[in-house]
Amino acid sequence: MDVLLVEDSDVVRREFERLIAGLAVVDRVVAAEGAAVAGREIERDTFDAWVLDFDLGDGTALDLIESLPGDSGAHRPSVFVVTNHGSPALRERCLDAGADRFFDKSGDLDALFAALEDTFPDPTAA
Image 1 (spheres, rainbow, N blue to C red):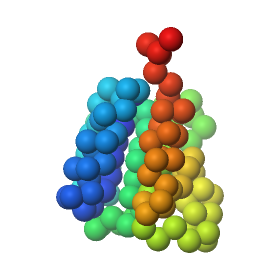
Image 2: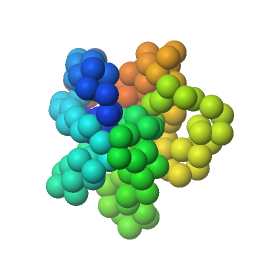
Image 3: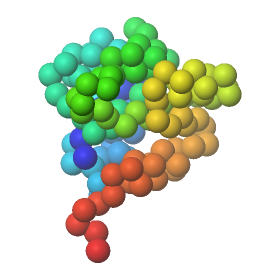
Image 4: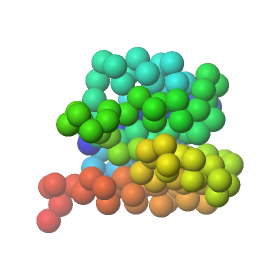
């Protein structure tokens, strides 16, 4: 699976990239530091999953979720939003906008990695 990771913190982005790349189901991770760079990546390539920090220096995950293809039959990635501010209202906004899952960075990271593995099981696993 190919993953687009969007995280504005250099330190967090590097660590997430390392952890996600280490998952058996992941073939490639493309990391972007903000919504503008991510938008350019989305225009030039397709991804099986997007892992989006909610608060980006130049926008939010909602800005990127709005660019998801509609019902036109175009490839639609699974969208996972992560944040340090996981209020129920924010979770609902993201899910209503089209995110598939929502995770709090402070306690749900194992669940994020498990969701990536569950959504895209390793085809070589017996």
